[in-house]
Length: 499
Image 1: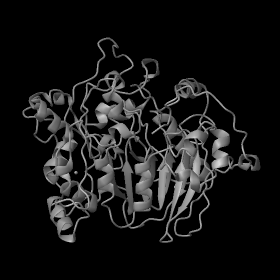
Image 2: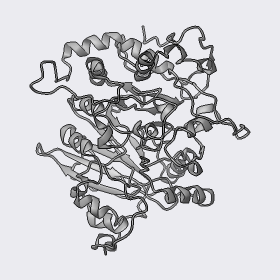
Image 3: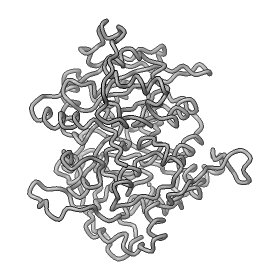
Image 4: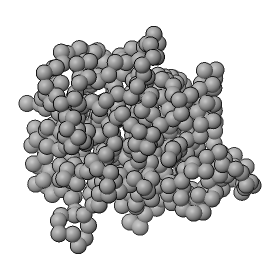
C-alpha cells in the first residue's frame, strides 16, 4: 500500500493534494492513503476559527471548508489526528473518530482503525503535565485557558492504548516520543534546530507518555510532526522487533513535509476504513473510567480493588462484534453540523459556537453503549436540551461509491438523540506551541511558490517493511552529518515545546 505521510497540514489541503497529484504523475504511481500528523485545521467557517488556539491575525480559513461544503472532494482517502492548532469545537463532536468531510476521517482523542489490512493507531494532541490527569471537561465556547487545554493529551487515552495486544503497523501522534532523539542523527537535527539542544539535554523535547507507548506497543512505524522539521530514527526493541520513526515538517515550499512509503499489506483487503474490534472492546470496557471533570482522574492499577487490565477476552470481543452485526466497516456517511464558509460570508457577529452533538457519535455511542463526553457535560450542567439546537442545519451525505456522488437526505429535527442517518450494519496562561513567524511565512509563501515534495530514504534492515523513496533530490549531504556549531540564541517564546 502506497501511503503519503504529511507533517503539519495547517489547513493547506489543496496544496497537499496537488503535490500528491504531481508526484503520482511524475512517478507513475497511485497513492492509496494520506496520513496527516496533526494541526490539520478542519475549520468549516469563521466561528470555528474562534476556537483555534492562535492569535487573531493568524486565523486563516485555508481550504478545508471546500471539502466540507462539497465544493471539492478529497481525491485520496485521508486520515488524521489532532494537534495543537485545531478547530477544537468540531473535533470535540467526534471524540471516538468520524468523518469530518467526505473521504476525510478523524481518529478521535485516540483510536485504532484497520485500512486495507494495516492496523493503524493514533493519539491526538500534545502532552502538558498540568492537564494530563484531568478529565475531558472542556466544551465550547472556550475560555483562553480551555481553548488550549482541550488539545492536551489525557491519561485515559494513554491507558486505553496500553490495553492493546497484537501487532500495530502504524502509530500516529503529533508530539514526538521524548527519547526518540537518542535513536537518530541528533547532530543533524541540532544543526537545523539548535534551540532543541537544551530541551534534549533535559529530556523535555517531546512526550513521555508517547515514549511509554513506543516501548509498550512497539509499532512497526511511528509518524509524527509538531516540531516543524524532518527527523528519522530506528528503535530496536528487546524482542528484536523495531520501530521506524519519521517526523515531517509543515506544508511549505522547499520543506520536507511529505514522504511516500510503500508498506506491505493484505492485497485482498479493500482500501477502506474499518473499526478495530479490540479497540471497540476496550472503549466499551473502560467507559466507566471516562471523566468530564477538571479534577484528577486516576486510572486503576495493581493493588486496586477493581479491574485494572482491560485487554479484552475473546468472549468480550465476541459480545462487541454482535453489537455491530459482524460488520466493522465504517459507514461512508457524513453529516454536516454547521454552515460552511463562503467567500461572500459576512464577518460580523463571529463568535464561538455552542456545543453540538454529531450524528456519527450519537449512533456509535448507541451501538457500543458508551458515553459522549459532551453529552455527560451537558447533563451535569443541565443544558442537554440545548445541545442539538443547530442540528436543523444538517445534511447527511452518503459517499459509498468511489464516484463520490453526494446524496442529500432529510434530517430529523424532532429529538436531540434521534439518529440523523440510518446506520444499518448489513443484514460506527497562553501556551502557544508553534512558531508564529513561521505561520506568517506560510501565509505569504504559499501564495507565490509552488510546492516541492521532499522525501528521503529511511534505511531499514527488514525486507518485510521496505520503504520506497519516490523523490530523492533532498537526500542529506555529508555536511548535514557534521557536528553543528551551537550558538546561544534567545527564544521568541520561552515555553516553546516544553512539556
